[in-house]
Image (cartoon, rainbow, N blue to C red; front, side, top):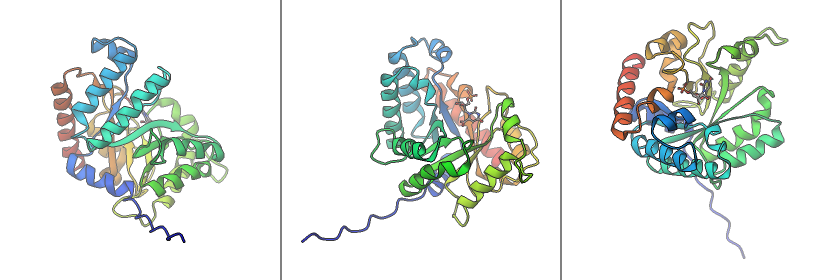
Length: 285
Ligand SMILES: O=C(O)c1cc(=O)[nH]c(=O)n1[C@@H]1O[C@H](COP(=O)(O)O)[C@@H](O)[C@H]1O
């Protein structure tokens, strides 16, 4: 006779874990983007050994102090399976040092394929399992359902592109749908519905560039707002209240090259992250 399995406790939702991490460590997300130019600037070869040394240095220097680390998958994929192995290791090491890992993979496909992406990044049994992923909604928000469901089950998060930091994004994101709302507004409304009633913060985030200046868009989606574009793309902490208005408390400001360029010294990486955090806390409150 088999004994009934005891119900698994539900994992703590990503939004709650993120809010706590931001309260304790500050809101900064540091992107791990091992550009060839950065490897060269660090005196490393543009090969898997260089990638590994670069990534390990960033994780060792910062994973015990910043709220979020965001490895950009393309920089690992360009080395094939050995690069992906470096990414796997970085995700695991960063998570065990206490950082939340946002895998920047920007996936988006028909629902049945989205389910496979969800199995890769949002199934706790996967070697690439992450606290959150970035996804692209341009096959229709509903196509993201398998990722949204998998994330909820795992206590992970999903960040959906809404208003990206690059100037080319506007032609799609500010276009009007048949109902008259912009594409970005439609995406933001979907995100708000996913997060309805969540406390202290929903687990479905929006990506909104810090570079965009004043927006005539309500960003109250009850979820985190990933704000890339600080540093190398020209935005600064002082731009955040302008772009995000009342939603600024939910902003997760993200910097890659602006901090990575300070390496390879771990102390210099830590100092740079600490300085940015101080600046951001002053502005974001
Ligand atoms: O999803 C992202 O992270 C993202 C969205 C966006 O709108 N703009 C944007 O720059 N990003 C990513 O954020 C990082 C920005 O890097 P830096 O410009 O070096 O700080 C890159 O990994 C981009 O792929």
